[in-house]
Image 1 (cartoon, helix red, strand yellow):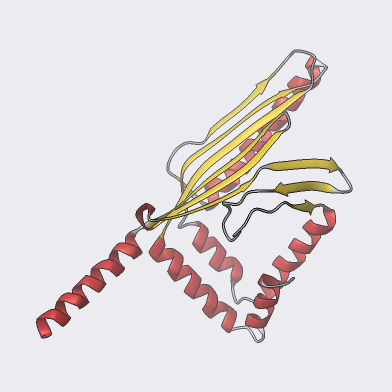
Image 2: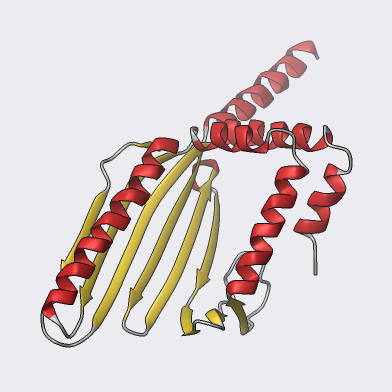
Length: 227
């Protein structure tokens, strides 16, 4: 009997070790080409046994006041049991609400920024590619905008490399198109990984930090499960 119990315990420990040593892989693709706008996110866990998929098939910039409109109609999306067509707008007011919610999270968590920096350092980028084709009617304006885009990309990737480990040198491209016809297309691809064991540990640390703040749990629940 003790042999059987010992064997079961060893097996459980082995399974737990395999889970903790496994990696969570995120594949993110952002693509815009003419009217084809797509956001794809695939998450792979537990050596490929668990796969999650999310897709936003259309992103439209209606105008500066109304902002971006995300059109969703995908039955296979995570947490979406049946096919539906839902439009979600991201405008100035929505961004302000997100900023307010983030500020509430900071106040409801002890040392949230410290926790966030420590967690980001555990994330590694296995691949990062960002290519853009840009063209305006005027060749001089095209060249100016091309240089500005190079500067923006370099700044963003520099900030990212300071907080997250990059296993591969980022591949950045900005291609000017001199043809007189306005053109803009861009594609961003990245593969990020984090150890499952550290993700669980980071989650537990976050819970402890929230519990240290009076009313912290209630504030987080209000933000996460609001209507």
